[in-house]
Image (cartoon, rainbow, N blue to C red; front, side, top):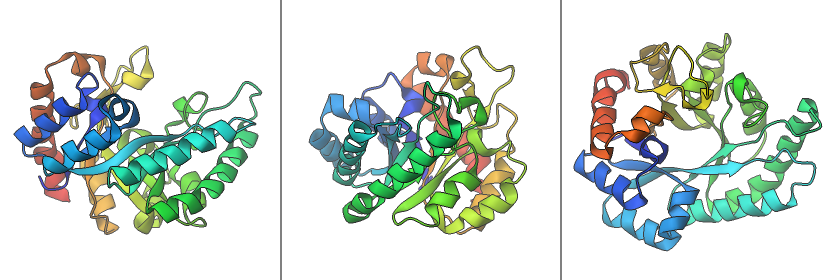
Amino acid sequence: MARLSLNQATVKRATVAEAVEGCVRHGIESIGLWREPVADHGLERTAKLVADAGLRVSSLCRGGFLTATDNRAALDDNRRAIDEAAALRTGTLVMVVGGVQGDKDLVGARHRVADAIAELSGYAAQAGVVLALEPMHPVFCADRGVLSTLSQALDLAERLPSVGVVVDALHVWWDPDLDAQIVRAGPHIASYQVCDWLTPVPADVLLGRGYPGDGDIDLVRLTRQVAATGYAGDVEVEIFNAAIWAAGFDEVIGEVARRYREIVEPVL
């Protein structure tokens, strides 16, 4: 289980301390943190807590939201996020780039994202942090992510310093060009995240993630493809699901570990 990471979103109602304690209890060596609970606990206190527990921080989520016509405030916030990632000793800041603005200009929004990432990449490089662009399923294009394919994210990662990509199973599994893009992504993969796509899709599609093995994604095939690129980083289990959030933290973390051992680990 050396490469398993619990993404904090999977136990959304847990404090940083509760999530860290759960990882230690179940033999999980890495945790993916989110900025809001880290801020609640305190950045320096969180860094010390994780280090004292012997854990790695696989990623910090999230930067991004860079589609506004005036991005000055967002750029400042993203610089703070880069500093936070460095303070937590993670080299990966997950970037959810933002959705279409009120003007409905999807093409313009994508151009603004590209310009903002280019501006931030130098600052990230100086901090030793990779901006990990997360392409998102097209259903989230309006409100969360105008980068919808791995190809679109790689077009930026291949030409900018300190920019990589997130391969999140939920967001990329549907892509008819996925096989070729995974090969292309190889040296640029900064994070690999797993969960499953549940059907029927809930009213809030954001919450349609399940434990690995409970849905429609061939995670064995996808994991084998990612491993074949030489990716040797952590594998985060990231689940947004109201029923899982309502369950006990220990039960959820234990189930995450079990599914990882059964489905993901054998093909890494």
